[in-house]
Length: 111
Length: 112
Image (tube, rainbow over all chains, first blue to last red; front, side, top):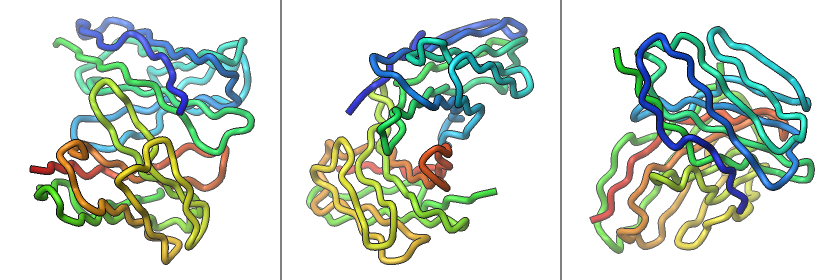
C-alpha cells in the first residue's frame, strides 16, 4: 500500500511557538485530512481539504491542500501544552477506496 | 457525533490463542475499517467492509480475518495470535467514500 512521507518525524517546541508540518505523496490526491492522536486514544479529525489550493482553519490550526495535489501542510499557531500528540495526514486518491496515512509527527510542547 | 466503540482498551493473550477484537458504531455507517498502528510505520489497513457480510483485504491481511454479520459491528479475528501481532488496533467507520474516518479509542494488544 501507499505511504505518505510526513515530516518532521518529531518536534520539541516551546509553548507559544508556531508549528509547521507537511505531508507529501508520489500520487495525486483528491482529499487530504489531518488527524491528531492523543496518547492512548484513537485519532480525531482536525481538518478536511477537498480542493487544490484550499486553505482551511480550525481555531489555531490551519491546513492547506497543495496546488500540485501531492502535498499538504498543517500549521499550529501559538502552541499550548494540550497540543501535544501525534499528528497524521491522510490522503484519498481519485480512484481510491481508502485513505492512506502518513507516519505521523510527534509534537512535544515544553511549558 | 458518531461513536465508534472498541470493546477492550488493553488485551494480553498467549501465542496461539484465537483473539476477537470487537468494534461497534452507532451512526449507520456502511464503511468500516481495521488498522494496526506501529511506531514508525503509521497506520496500516488490515481489512475493510463496505456492507454487511462483505469484506475486502487491506494492505496487511495475513494472519487476520474479519466478520460483519450486522451493519453496526465489525470484528477482527486473529486466528492464531503471534508475538508480531502485538500492536495498537484501531477500528474506524465513515459515512461515504469522501468523508473522513471516525476512529475508536483503540485496543492495545500484547501477545506473549
